[in-house]
Length: 213
Image (cartoon, rainbow, N blue to C red; front, side, top):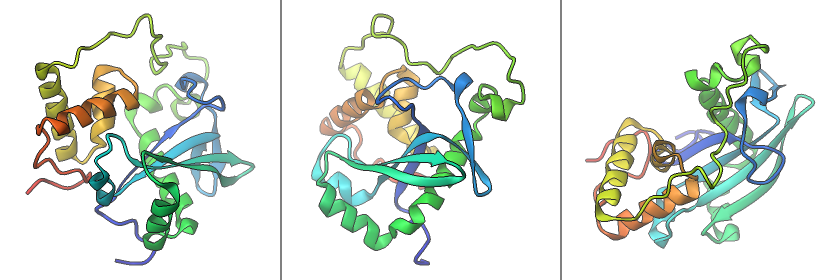
């Protein structure tokens, strides 16, 4: 493996963020900035997960990097750890994939996210029609409207099915659960953790883009 190559067994993905913490993202008002030869949101996050992290037993683990794109440049604003010791895992990550290559990898993941048909038709700079109706389909539902789910055995079986099928397709499995049930990623991660504790996810590959043996 080349030094600058992102390890194949690792998982990563990017998503746009608003300037306000945890604010819902409305793709119809999303502004993209040119950085080198790529268009990226003004603010976006990038998550890294490696197989060794799941040995900690936590429900949602990873390193999360916040980026700001401004005046044609991309800078790291913040690095956080989810259910991990940041100092230990930051060293683990940078030894295998140096920080100077993070921006390129994050831009690539962000480009893949923006390439989705449902995203392209909503973002003005990608759809080529700034005057189209503001449908706002990607806004997070309010708490009053969001459906509540009971963590029953049947519900965990459905979570397991969605997670397993997404992993088989090489897609972020926890995010697939969140999108299917229209819940926050943290909620989906809790369900996945519950399914794992019940033994429902044994044998399911946790690295995206690979198949379970």
